[in-house]
Image 1 (cartoon, rainbow, N blue to C red):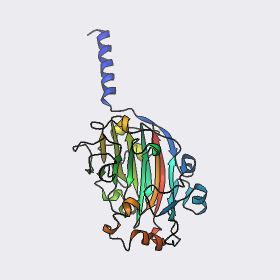
Image 2 (tube, rainbow, N blue to C red; image 1 turned 180 degrees about the vertical axis):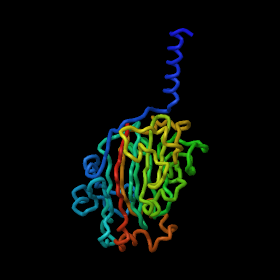
Image 3 (cartoon, rainbow, N blue to C red; image 1 turned 90 degrees about the horizontal axis):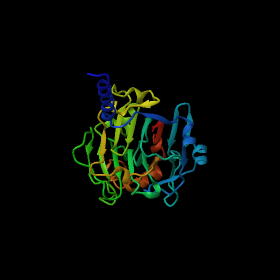
Length: 319
């Protein structure tokens, strides 16, 4: 074999290794910890689009009422748990924030110690293009209602995006059509296999890590409980670079085989919010084992929302 042919073979080997990876290792672009949440997010003091029994407040109000506060590596976002509400007045004060930056191809990792729990609660960590919903797509990373585990991951889009039934994931498929106009905006969902991925079981275990990767080939979501021995070191340590090829099988896998991801998903803001009752939590409240009606419970039981808070150790975005 000549020196030239050996060089060509080595080049082919290098190219083969590069092509065997689905995507490159990505570097840290946003490391949001503690007070950094105030710089990275805008507060949305808007009417709740999902018709919840909440009043979203601005940043100044959230800080003065201790609905958001930060110290060290902890950022708290919560609902009011002190006020009795009148039937005709505004809802319970809560918080909805969205990133100042938008993201297309990226990996987002959320280190969460505690998520809101309690009857009537509907917490969410998600991404969307608000001005172009649903045609700009929506990715629900953490979502659930009324303490009903496990976590539900879902996509919501315009028409023409669906998922195949057989996918390489640990979760269980729900509806396969992602079109928001189908079945009351159910979206194409996946229920996780771990009960401690949501609500009180999640909190009792000290929380865990959620991660989402989006590129033009797929969208994937992973979950690792706090005490799991399978947490990748780059996730656990908040590394400067992550290698998602080493993260194992995802909880939810949404391939582009029946959905043009680049077409259906625009640049997204990351949103974190806590609503109460509304289109989902309110509509299924009677099936949850919770007392009274959802709105009456929210109005008359402020202490029931003492544990209705997020505690974030960090949010990291890699691009």
